[in-house]
Amino acid sequence: MTFLPPADVVVVRDLARRVADIAAHPVQRQRQRLWEGLNRLERVRPTVHIQALAPNIWEELIPGGTLRTTDPAARAQEMELRKRIYAWEHFRDDRVIDAVVVCAVAIRGDLQWTGFGLPTMVERSGVRSGAHAFRPVIVEERDIEKIRTKAEISVDWGDTEARHQRLCELYDGILRVEKRGRDFFWMPIMDLFIERRGIEQTFVDMLERPAWVHAALDRITTGYENNLTRLEELGLLSPGHRNTSLGSGGYAWTEELPRADFDGSHTRLRDLWARCATQIFTEGISPGMHEEFALRYERRLLERFGLSAYGCCEPLDRKMHVVRSIRNLRRVSMSPWVDVARAAEAVGRDYVYTMKPNPAIVSMERWHPELARRELEDAFRKTRHSVLEVNLQDLHTVRNEPRRLDEWSAIALDLAETYA
Image 1 (cartoon, helix red, strand yellow):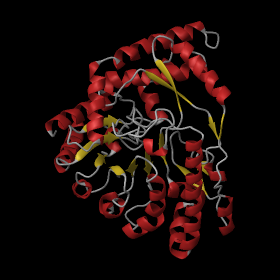
Image 2 (cartoon, rainbow, N blue to C red):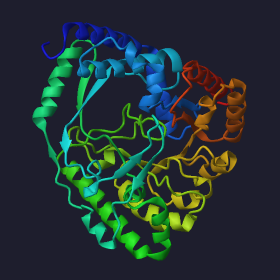
Image 3 (tube, rainbow, N blue to C red):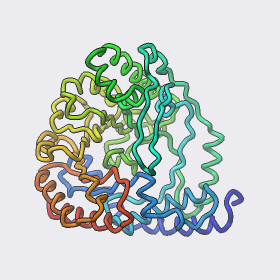
Image 4 (cartoon, rainbow, N blue to C red):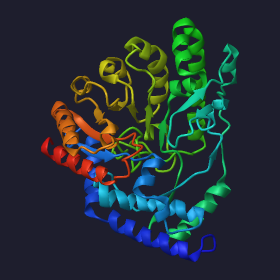
């Protein structure tokens, strides 16, 4: 194993053995069945998940100085394994910890990841994890002609195979290494445009030059359509029914995918989940404008997939009557600041409702577990008849008190059992 220092290999393989032991615990299969039931829209016990994705939150939970490896590649593997172990030992939420290491296929030219030919200009504050602002790169009307709509996708199989072989060698006999193409899509059409045009200006444009905004959104959507078609043609998709995060809440576990006519080798878009969201559309954007400038384009993409999810930080509690127009919709996620009772009634039992507590509850200067319990219990009462998951996300700090997440998850799981 020449590509890593021997001492680093020992550290990683020891951690991998611990992950393998955790993955073999019977509770993992129980959790998988729980997610499958939820995604079938059964009224199972509400699932609870801490989505601690931001690097700065993990730095508080697993400080970089505690890592024992030295090589950058080894440190990346060590960190990922330690995250799984940490979640098992501390969060005790409903995530499934499996014995799989994913080696992503090296796809080049994916239009979404290259910004459809338009870069972003970001002005950042000097504060760590501070705010930042997008500066417009779409300034003149003709600038939308720069939005690329043709996908010129290729694969670096040499890089893919080399990484796969190295990972197989590293984890040999302990964890299974799987090569995977794209197995889930998040397609934020309007967000991509706004990052390149500016928030305030886009809202003005929607009123003063709607045809031009539609032309831009149509180009981005067409680019996505061509991108998706090309990825499918090239065989760069992998079945989307496994332990894949679905973005703003939940996991992909389902027995409905891949579709019954799947041939076992060539994965199609209809064998996957996808999500769209227009997070920037606040209460000030009416349901009619949400339909006109968002859903009109999002449906073109989502309905090519097997199952779809919608929303993230939008206040959709007053907009579900237009969101329901997505034919294959299965999951809905919305802002923590919606009226939870109204949201639960609007979603009904027709979709999974991802209820997101205000993340400030664990980020305030002082931790108030009694307040967390009161807020959660109020939400559980209001969603008692929903197909519900509780997803704590958008975390950036726990004030260097990691126990806050341990205690929050214990409270949430206790209440989930009570209100099951």
